Image 1 (cartoon, rainbow, N blue to C red):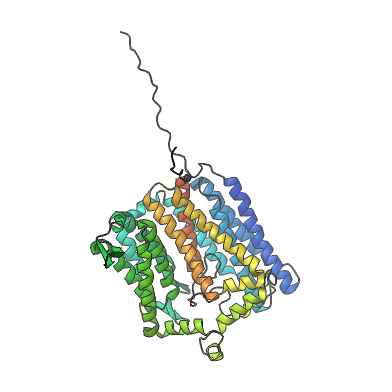
Image 2 (cartoon, helix red, strand yellow):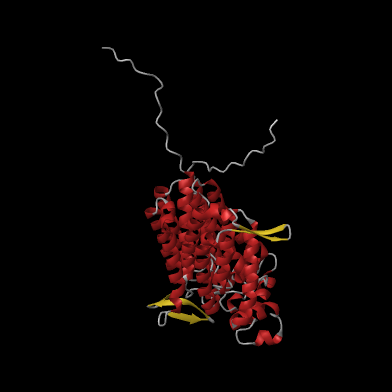
Length: 468
């Protein structure tokens, strides 16, 4: 009797499921409009007229994206778009609620720019699906994507172009608009890492040198010529982020780098090496960079009075923690809290705003939807046949997952506060457009993975006899 365990099935069913997606899209639109109605009732005892205007605009955009999928990517995963729309809709409703509470007039509260960026993000998603039929062609541009990522990260440091706000220099000004290039750089770096790791995965898995203590082997190291190009590109990118004080993106890219390296090589020694290097670099940065030392001081001593009263101190973090605690299990109701009094309540602290209004139950629901989106990305990685697609899908999923960890970890004091944005939920155009581009890549890869294989030409099985 064979003792070999059967492998779990990885293939995705070749079904379209667009009608199921349509139902979920309509539910996401209804949730967004219901949230705005509830906020208006809590703020001013009336359903706001903006619910119909903004809700119908958002609904039209969502349905247009769904219709485009029917023609461009009919076999795409039916859960990815509804999850993204649910998160985007909740974010739009929360930003409107915060602006309405801050202005005191629900009829003059505006979220016009957030809807504009939502439309741009959906258009970019559809354009990517239309023009990028085979994502594996991105593997040809290994070093070009690395160069593009480094250039994007370095743009804010160009005099006259970069803008310094809130102690960090990570924005650029283009006319009346500002943009955060690092949001797009993380996609380019994931493409670079996917391509490079697929090409070098065999040599990275094979050890060239073993480090031993006596007779005991501690670590296996690959050849430097195989590993160093990736390390140099990654160190340059991370170094630029640290210099520009974009600590959130630095931590995000570091975690994604380690996770993708482990997926490619399946060697836990790389995780150990990476964490060791990270701890050493973090300790050194605490003594070298004052802004990093300030973040660590806020992390450890958030409730100390002198740290709380300090300029750029822990007041914002403490207010967020108190707001989440005040929300309790079921929250104060959408629009019933005081989250609008927190600085950056619609961007860096939008999780705290949601936790106060919706409570732990509502926040957990949002997190479940986020991690369902991550799970679908991992499912695409398992089902894809090409190694590059496996790495790219898993890399995008890791980025979304670690981004949520960095934001929520900072709010709950698991890690220092870094100023990272939440996918789809936070206000801002760069993060929203980058999130929709990642969704577009996942939709395209899932469509290719679920699409039925072409039928082979059937042989007739008989030899014809030609009579003379």
